[in-house]
Image (cartoon, rainbow, N blue to C red; front, side, top):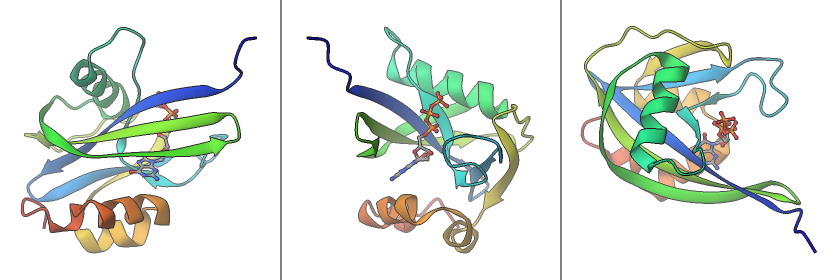
Length: 140
Ligand SMILES: Nc1nc2c([nH]c(=O)n2[C@H]2C[C@H](O)[C@@H](COP(=O)(O)OP(=O)(O)OP(=O)(O)O)O2)c(=O)[nH]1
């Protein structure tokens, strides 16, 4: 019997430029999480390398060429009964701050910690706390 369960792997970039992290706001008409703020990134394609997938997603969503430094944390959750997401979040550095958004997002913000605490949803903030992301010395 074929399983109807789905497992997706999502790569996210914690992109820093001059001490601030880039967060983006999903389009309001997005069926999942419309209007909410998140890190840049998306699903790996079958057969793709992790870093290549991350660089592709970052280029597609915000038009930046970044340097990937290291993995910060991995997390997983179910979006509904038959769909589980595994998220790998990587520290990245950008030499530039000029962002070109795709149709997926309607706004962006290079953010200090205080702003991130105001804008990101509790689930992501919880993962930041659990994985000491707020202690990153490169982040203002
Ligand atoms: N709990 C938790 N949720 C997170 C984290 N990072 C993160 O983006 N999310 C949420 C926000 C997104 O709604 C969701 C999955 O990311 P996504 O929207 O880019 O994935 P997707 O399936 O749409 O991928 P794609 O179509 O854009 O390729 O996970 C995190 O660290 N912890």
